[in-house]
Amino acid sequence: MNQYIYVLKPTRLGMLSEPTPREDEIVGQHFHYLKDLTERGVMILLGRTTKNDESTFGICIYEAENDEQANQIMKNDPAVKEGVMTATLYPYRVALMRK
Image (cartoon, rainbow, N blue to C red):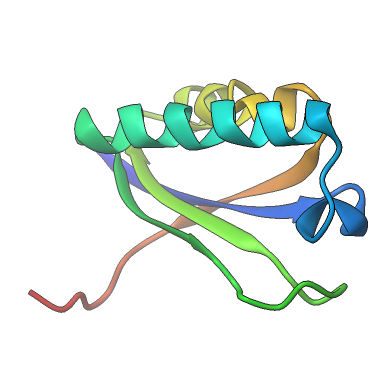
């Protein structure tokens, strides 16, 4: 298994403090998608910064068989698929992790 990270950024900054009903629904789908992958042992770590300004971002660190599978996982994220967030994929390796 290889490790990857994708970095998420909102396409509309205002969605962080005042999401539209559509954005709210898609972010809920995004959360459930990532929760399912976590429960299946794919995701290692997920989270986002707590700022609601242009510096904010989220990360998803996970395992995949290859680059193609890693890219599919990212592209199938509802927030990415529906254009609520942009995502950039990187090969990654966790070096240290607390127990």
